[in-house]
Image (cartoon, rainbow, N blue to C red; front, side, top):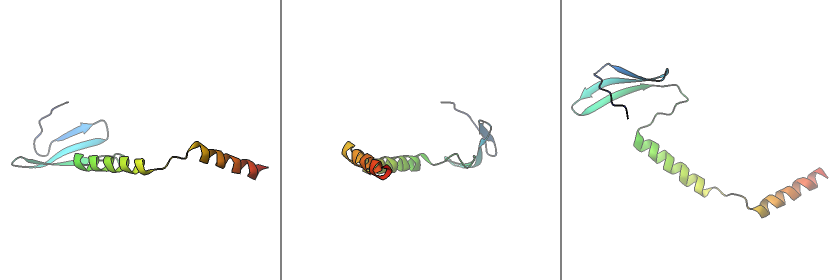
Length: 82
């Protein structure tokens, strides 16, 4: 892990297009501003973890067709062609 010290109004660059700025410091709280491309998701870690858990639960609920169902679909497609 890279550890950097920054003061208010100073910035950190990640790559060429992600900019993290120290907006304000009050006591032990630091406010940061993040400027990133729209295709880069930016979340607080607790929100990221909740989204990840929700996606895993959603994937568990998805039904995967069994071989019998796939075979039936293949038979229907053959009948439609012929």
